[in-house]
Image (cartoon, rainbow, N blue to C red; front, side, top):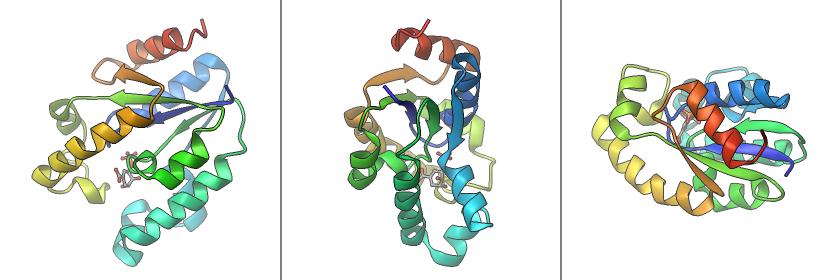
Length: 165
Ligand code: S3P
């Protein structure tokens, strides 16, 4: 295994869990959204507003290529990344993919008031996307981990499932 990749819906805790997991394992940590914002010099929200989702997905794809050479890194992916076959084809190689699965009500508690996520501005639409995406995350992941728990519990569960203790 070279890297641990966290996927899952917006608000599942990929970034916060990923950071803590990396500290625990002595791994590097990267977040695809953070890398994209740094590279583009504007926020994800602004990228959607100015250039549209299709452009963002292409930038995301290019970012997957860039990070594919990393080693010993916990990679937190934006919620859409692993729903696209072309990204999965790049990221699956030698890496372990973890589906962080939080329930929809918990996700709402965490991010319903957050204005920074363009695809979580309408709860009904987000719920439809959540249902569609869940199947995709499940089909690409090596492991499925409960994302409703605390960060400490979740990190501990990931370390156990990967046998890294
Ligand atoms: C998206 C999720 C976001 C971000 C963008 C699109 C998605 O990341 O990449 O707003 O399609 O689910 P988080 O999952 O970190 O919120």
